Length: 484
Image 1 (cartoon, rainbow, N blue to C red):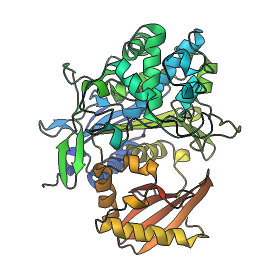
Image 2 (cartoon, rainbow, N blue to C red):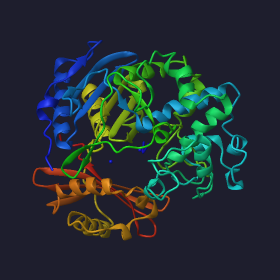
Image 3 (cartoon, one colour):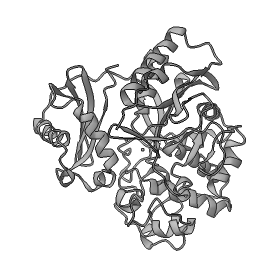
C-alpha cells in the first residue's frame, strides 16, 4: 500500500541457487549469468531473503527465476510459482477496472465523486474520478503513521466495514484544490475500490477476478488472505536493525483494500503484460489514457509524470511504464518498455529491498539500450544545500531526532522502521570522503537534489528535497545504480 522502504542473516548461500523457468531463447547464457551475479550480490548487500525475477517479451517468458528463500523458517526456496504481495503494483488492475466501467458508460472520468458517494462533504464536489486515478484529488493520506496507529481512525489492527472506511475517509482534510497539484495518496485508490462496488454491486477484488484475472488465466492472482490455504505463498520479512522479523500483522480489512492488497507471481504477470499489448481487456484509447501523463489545472504535466495507476517516463528515447509497491514485508517493481518489447518484474519478501534498482539494472542487461544513463557530477550552484544535508546526515548517523526539520508530508511516513533503514544506509557511508551533486530540479517550490556519497568502497545515492519553507520534504538513501 505504500503500497509507493540480534543475529544477522547471510543469504549468499541460499541466493546462489535458484529455480528457473525459461520459455524463449532470446537471452544468452552470458546474459543470464550476468543477471544471476547482479541479483545474488544485491540480495546479499540488501539482506533480502527471497526474490523472483520475470522477464517478458510480448507474452514470451525470457526468464522466470527464483532466488533465495520464500520462507526462512522452513528453508524453502523461491520458485517462479512463488506468490508475493503486490503492494501498490495492484493499483494498475484497479485502474484498468475503472476504465472498463468507463467504456461501458457506467462511470465517467469527469464525474464528481459525490455522484458515487452522495453523503460526502461538499468539499468533495470538485473531485473527479480522474483525480482519484491520477493522485490529484487533494485528499489527505489515510495511511499516515498517526492515522493508522493505536489512536488513529484507521488503526491497522482493527477491522472496519467498507461503509465505516468511507465515513473515515470523508472526515479527512483536503490538502489542495483538485487538479492543482500531484501527491501520491493511497486514499484515492481506497475510494476507487469502494466506487467499483457502488457501481457494480460486486466487491472490487471479485470484480477483478471476473473481468481480469480469470479471463487471463492468472490463476495465482487474488486478494490477500491469511486464513485461506494458498499454494506457494511466501512469507514477508522486515529488517529491524540487524534482526530479521516476520511481517507486522494487520487486520483483514487492510489486507483487502484497493490500494494494493493482492497476491501474484512472475508467471501471472507475464499474462497481464501480454494482455497490455492488445485490446483483449480494454480499447487502445483507454490504455493510451492510462499511459498518458495527467495534466494539472494549468495544463502542465504533474511533477511525477503519473498517469492512471502508472508512472511514466522516457529513458534515452525509450518509452517506460512502471510502478512499485511495498506492504507488510514485501516490495516489488514492474516495468515495461513497450516499444522495445521488454518487461521486467521483480518481487521480493523484504521491506529492505530496492526492487526498482533490480528491475532497471536487469532491463539494461537484457537490452543495453535500456541501461539507465550514468549519473555524472555537475556544478553545485547551491552549496548551502550540501552543507545542510551534511549536517542532517551527521545527526542521523549519531542517532539524533530530526523530526523538527521535516515537512508535514515527510513526517507522515517517518516511521521507526524508515528511520532504521535510513540510518543503516547512512552509516555505511558516513562520515563520507566525497559528497557529489549529480542532479537537481525545482518544481512547485520543491528543490530536489541527488547526491552520490562515497566512503571507501561504499557508495550510496541520496535524494534530498527541500520545500519552500526550508523543511526537508524528501530524505531517501539507497544503492548507487552506477556501482554494481
